[in-house]
Image 1 (cartoon, rainbow, N blue to C red):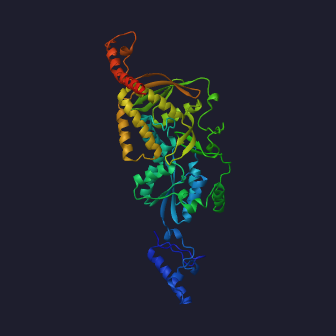
Image 2 (image 1 turned 60 degrees about the horizontal axis):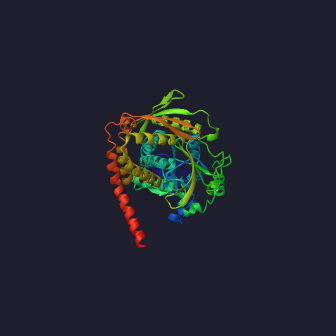
Image 3 (image 1 turned 135 degrees about the vertical axis):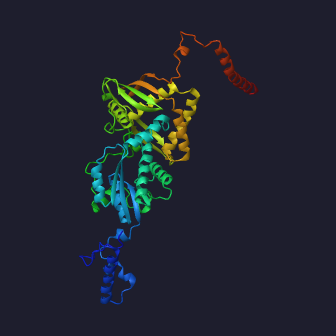
Length: 473
């Protein structure tokens, strides 16, 4: 890197050769100024008014370091990119393609025009499905009984590649546009520190100089216009949205009042079930080790056997029939409740199918333990602890539980619902002869009498104690 790359006003000196030549040019400038005045001090010579450095590129001699910015192409992160440059940082923009509807080429061009030294657009769709969504399928991961964790699962995927780029580029800093009230700041930053312990994080929405300057969208728009940042030309929806191939989430704005109904035009991933087709789609999902390996559309006579293709196909079928809509109030890790609306069509189909094949093939007591692990898995993902030792332990236990989860589930998708039709497995624990009401088999009904009496001992003792309490009263 050159020590100086100066062009004093019009063109007193331009140096782009070896460092030695640049020093010679600087020495000549100093000599010329010394001839003009013998009273200038060293600091005066190098002051902006002296003209010696002229319009030297400050990023070559004044840079605070390189920062990798998680960039979306939207108004917020575009303003953050320019603001970081104002603060003296070299900015590398990083965009993660996790299946959102985005013009990545246009966003890349925009970042370059705004002064990003480099722009990385990374296609993470396949690894998002294979490394993050499928482990959640194995876990039957659902936060607080309803939320399928679409945003929560995406954050460690995005953060992992951001840190890989930071280490490859020798960057000391990473930055993001998450707000100071939400979960995403925690999810991103815990991942950053876990993967790159020495990294420094710039979170503009937690820096007083930034959030006091940009108190709302109007301030951001004014800043954008002043700095030549293209501003949105379409009206902004009165809510915020986060999209990836697993789901779309909606919150804030008019949705902050939990009593307000979601507008009919809010949903982008799923049809209104009332307007969905009047004939169902019948599917067969095949599982091995608890993950889907093939989906067959019985209705259409086609199949998919690649993880990403399977998920996208299930999204299409689920979206067509309005599957996977929820409207909930959830507990953020940071301590407040928030209202969120979610669409997760493919994930909802997979959850129903996996629950069915798991119950069919897993031992009762193992599954009871595994259910508890699934709740813990969900909480750790939601709270941002994907790269923690406790999550590694929970995930490995769940993976162990999935070794015999193998077979096929037939289901129908229709008018917002998923209906299980049947299942089969070479590792089924279901014994048709044993359970049949028409065949006695090796089961002796008399054994049930002793089983019932043994279990009744505890209940009788409880009732005796209740009776003693009432007598004393």
